[in-house]
Image 1 (tube, chains in turn brown, cyan, yellow):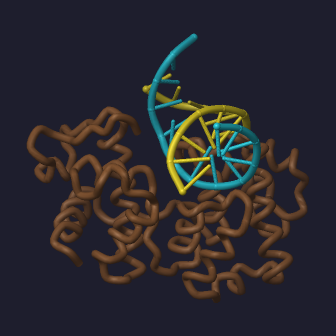
Image 2 (cartoon, chains in turn purple, blue, green):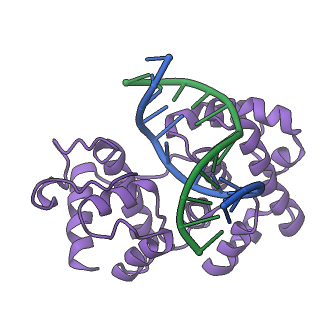
Image 3 (tube, chains in turn purple, yellow, brown):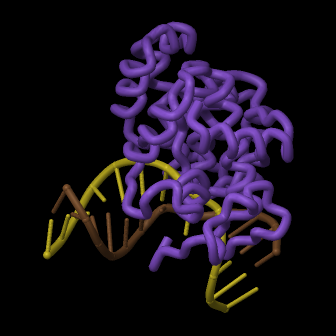
Length: 222
DNA sequence: GACCAGGCACATC
DNA sequence: GATGTGCATGGT
């Protein structure tokens, strides 16, 4: 692990302790990954609870439920009609191409699994990587807005860096270890969410002593 | 009542 | 191939 990652990871882990994805099953991870697109996690929780109450948190149930009924259940997470179609795309893929078995889908290696997910309408790079890392439990680094913001503001990566450049930055500086990738991503999301928002709140941030002279860097836009 | 949260697909240039 | 826009809700 590079010196930078070593220092950041150690500070975050010491400050927050181990994190975990708040889900009870791989399917719940996948559904949560879609529902949290452009949406704060607290808005996703009620939608997941609605799906559980309706007995709809099963691959076959998601596949069979009509669009309107599914949209109504996930309404609290926002973009409900759009996300209902995305969840059904995912469920249909598992039913038709993998005999309804997530284990069958997850037996592919990281790259081919990632490609299959990316081929689905509604699954982009971040959602695909979230599913690979937390549902399929294979080491691929998830880049989210928090990771980009935290690392750009500290001057550790360029403001122009795109998803793949940032993903490479992490994957080339870390051991290819599932638990490390899961933990590090979750810790970065936590510190990004609590301290490195559009208006940074560096007071009490565990990475405060690593800031460049003059405080966090500000791009023209975010 | 404006702003924040902050991914993806698609149209357009 | 970069840029802009629509998708929708709930909390601050």
